[in-house]
Length: 357
Image 1 (cartoon, helix red, strand yellow):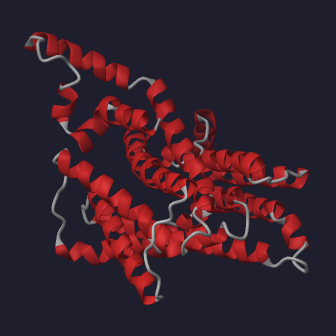
Image 2 (spheres, one colour):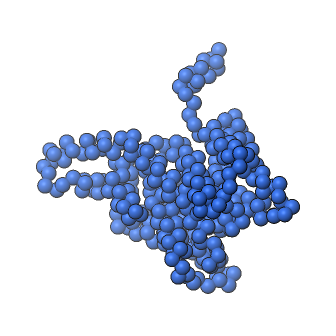
Image 3 (spheres, one colour):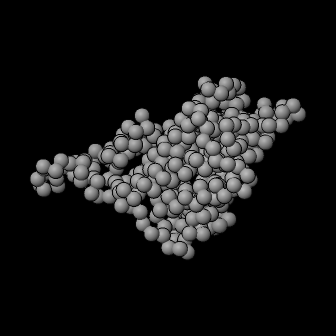
């Protein structure tokens, strides 16, 4: 299934995505070489129109949501056999090889100025290193679906980071959305917080997950800096994965850990899923989604994939739903929707009229 999705991504992506990652030559190969130039010119616009259909956008949402929704349980499968740092090192080493190989084969590997590399090192630490150490560790204390729900608070951390570093002050919608999100997390952890006197693991897992989310948001702030420096996302992420894996390896060696690959098929299967669908395929599909609908609307995946993650936790980890837990999930999702959703046009027009008066 992974190979099928990867083939579909490479052969049938939207025209914008084909130009940005694969190149215009790859798009022309979708038409038979025996066709005449007139046929090629007539066929290309029709093919582009098909690729721009709403169905393609919906499929991209499904791919990203499914890939990232199942990663949280796959992370759970990585806990135990070997140290967390080594597991993360294996994941992003394999992902870096696949992504960099893809860019080299498609001739999209571009040089990056040396003055940008310190920022890319920070990007690697934030997106492919420290945050995952904390997130992997959190799944050892609490259900992976709960970790995924906590990760949705990255929208709150991102807004605060944009305000602190770039002067983009959040509005009232953010305030209300953050309030819903924090209240929802409190509901989700109501039972664990109530039982802290008997089990402190819940609060430990929650703090680790929140810390990992905060570090991830710091990596997002670095990505904004790199974007303003004119560094393409694909080049920054590919090199960030390389730096992240190197730093993870150094950290593991400093702690006296030796890389040993487990022979457990479950572990290897989880690793392959995390590296290819969870990192490479999801990243490529997410970039295509951003190109089609914009970064703001593409961020709706952070609202959708926790639902998948909690569903997986329900069937595979024995997570038990309670009325207050279901209310908490609804409040977290409502908070994210409040932050990201666009107001209907008639509401926006009414607000403008009130301001004019």
